[in-house]
Figure: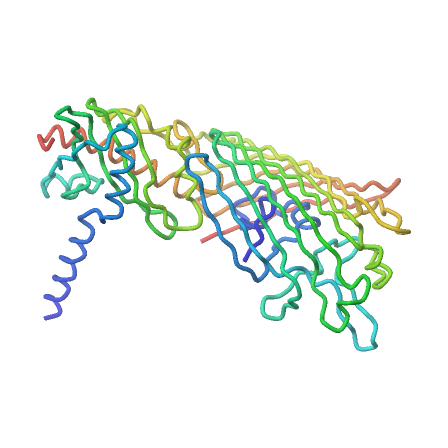
Length: 272
Length: 176
């Protein structure tokens, strides 16, 4: 199952978002495509224009024993939770994690979502009692879409608090932060008439994300992980399900004299 | 033989397609009752001839299009329809006043995980006040879409426009 956190993880097909690359927040903070084994229920309250989801998932894998009796960690300072994603049937299952999401769509054109994810990581049985083998994760995400006529906008804010990272770093030396945070806002305008079959969106997105939003113990915050990207470009929807995209990204980090290469991207997306 | 079987199958299918399932009918009755604020009403079926039905994009069956009467008073009209979502279909109810202006619409049953946002009471209110024979309601103009429910929003808009266009032609051909 796809974890319904933020906008892009659940709807990650290229025709559903602007820009060739997914928003970086949906890569560094929410590790899209983030899927886990799980069960869930969904429902709607039509009178109140609310939908809800509640799911129990397997969690991220934190550590494993390697051959020389050392311990490897999968989570890290730069990549955050990304390295801990598991692969279906090969998953390590230890303790359940819980996710709930509520969406409100009662104002015309506006959709608001609030999600919470809570649980611990998964370590194999031999080491799960070691200090730092597992960490706790509490992630909250708020997202909003707005679209009326030719104008659309979307944004999201994600914050993840990680517990026991000091022990985890002592055990694995991975430099994992104790909080991850990211947000973005994006506006887009359709340059073609509203009734036309084709759509040509010009868009701009501002995002900031930091996998070292906080650190525990002796670990110093690495300002290179505090990133700001500004992306501007065009999404040309030639037909329903077919999009040609191009954009330019101005990228920066919080280091003094820190350089991040800017990027020019082109892509084609087909969804059928 | 094969021809006969397929002929029978077609008859069976069309019989299934041509009547409102009891569960849907009950839900429609509950919605009408709530709207009229009385349980005391009758649905007088409007039967549309097969010939006229062929000319319309809307499907009129023997029990999905009706006049609503309460204590001898004409209250309006109703239609129960079925339209496609992305991978399934959903059932909906449309109520009109005696002048054929939409007073209420409701999604009675929605069957798939995505797109059910069209059941939102506030979203459906956009159709209220639309009149048969009026200008078509345009997606993303008169009808504001819902993010995450694009296909169902378009489907509902199309179904409503079909109904608003077909009723005047039934009137013109003296079916109503």
